Length: 119
Image 1 (cartoon, one colour):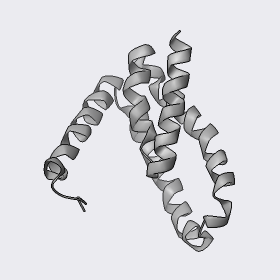
Image 2 (tube, rainbow, N blue to C red):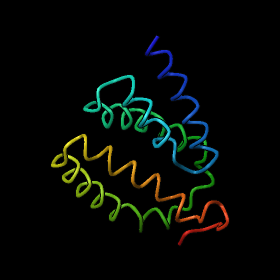
Image 3 (tube, helix red, strand yellow):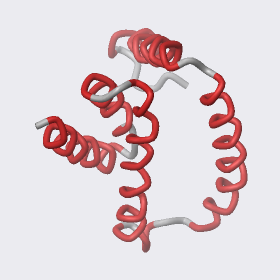
């Protein structure tokens, strides 16, 4: 039953992420953390993203502006390496606390829905 729930939530997160342009992983984090161990949250969410990205690439191939991709890829690779190193050093409990603080702070960034864009 756990796998069925995770599968359905994963499909929902994929649809939301595709329509909104991202954020599906934030929907998956608490659900995966609840049903599985916090230690496996990152690998499970990243596996889902790894499967979902090629599908989006195929669906939106004609709409991609490749000149922007050329500027984005080097910094994305560097950022992912630095983020991975930081993630390995942090305790899983602190990651949950930091994620919770970030999610709560978004309410204040948007001034309880009165502000359209935070930055």
